[in-house]
Image 1 (cartoon, rainbow, N blue to C red):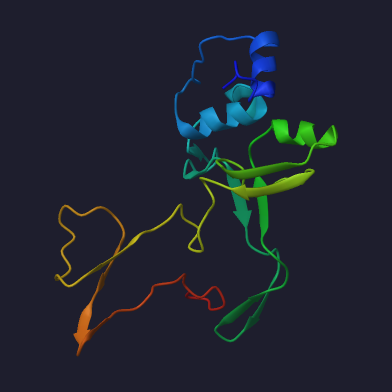
Image 2 (cartoon, rainbow, N blue to C red):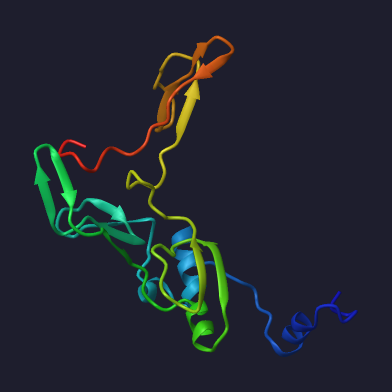
Length: 186
């Protein structure tokens, strides 16, 4: 199609650009590679080395791409804990993604489902974050498995197994949501 003049921008890129073999990042894993794609920097520049990082004081793992903290103050009423403020979210990836530079040049961008973009940074465009967006449980996604078979955890991957019960012509079950954040015990 380029030779027929149907793709003028790609033809111009072919004529004026450079073609080289593309290599991946080290380590060659998704969060590192996607962060490098976005920023043009290496892990030492964008601060994403793996899916998880470790807390230097407790040595416990945490999601390397985003930090989520609850409200700083809470109101306690009996068994209820009511947050006085909103949770804070912080993107831990450093360096500026290329769409921010495009926005500074007056070019609007739509960025869809690119990993390591939560919470979205402000720029001239719209962004729907991709991989590594925490779910309502604060995890990276806990699947639910609905079955008529009795619960048997041997050899099954982690997740929530829920029973399906026959009721006449219908099968019933329930949806599991996050624990209540408004009670002390969850």
